Image (cartoon, rainbow over the protein chains, first blue to last red):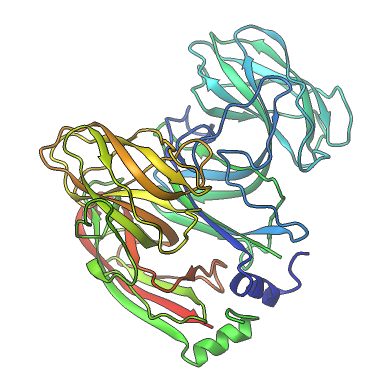
Length: 267
Length: 262
């Protein structure tokens, strides 16, 4: 399980064909603003767009359609070799494992929203797992503010409460924000409630639990590629069932297309 | 066993000259800044088109067969003396030409893939061989077979890049991971008096970022652990993406693709 040496990795790739080499692209839409994340989950390209999650308790994602996913390899383990991409605007691209999402949460009204997310399918303790919101319907007026009013931390402590986050005015479709945790917490196992303290007019979102895997800074119209063997020695593991997706940290409001390549080896 | 048991075998293969160094000089076609471009120059046959096996048309790079030994891309060195760009080398698998003048369904019925036969990771690129004289066309894959073998798949609409040698990647139906064949394309908007395209099934392999007049190289073994495999029969061509408007028009990029086999 895993690679005993660089030689073992070379043999697994070149002799045993234990490699998945996937080219991807996504056509972007206009981000909210500079310094705001933007989701590619439901946007067109290859792989084809991801589907909307179910409402509470949501969907645990395993080999999800719309994600980049690879066949199971157990008892072998899969690891990222390279992640490279071209983007049409300056941005940072995040590759993440989309674990759980809960859809159809309207924030057109203050108060507590029930989330009660299902159990994580991977990274089960929640250590390093982040909770995000992802807009599926734009806010047409107002500046929403919200918080995780009840979540279970990676230590298994229930009823944790994150600090409030004020979004930008009128968040656009597909914009994303990472939700703050309570002091001292290192991850999220599940989200029970979201509290909206200031509302916008309309606005529907998903709560998404993700495991970030790689961040890739890209200068507009150039190619950048991270090597996870020789440069970083990270060899980030990809679990069976992983549902890999992309998000963009925007530097403006221009729609950004991405074309890239992800290579994973297993052994 | 074909392939390499360890890095010493790779080194020895190089020392034993089990490699191909292929110098090239290509035109970069990016008539409109911000669009993908293709360096392919000729129209393919109409339906069912052709497959590309050791096809050296349009200066595509072909390499001798090495079976039972396996080939891998070892290094890519290149320079663009007149602009900055991203170069993407891809294996050209099958293509069919179509006339995009007028709306409606265009029959494609592409041939079986000669390599990457399941279609996993295979993309559909539309390359504009004869520029569209009108506003950009809008089209979608109205029937294709995905990499799972499911037929009748339908992709969402894409607005084309329609300058000469522009390229447009076609989006897939939700969840699909690749294309095995294309049966038809539906053109829903078309305003040009001329517009001839190739519908091309491609497998991108590697990319390099070139800054104007700066020689760049990427080692796909020791620097970026990609080591993409090149199958016998591969037809290696380039798509490009211009960084700035100085690349508008037809600018050359030249360099060398180096392969090792064992």
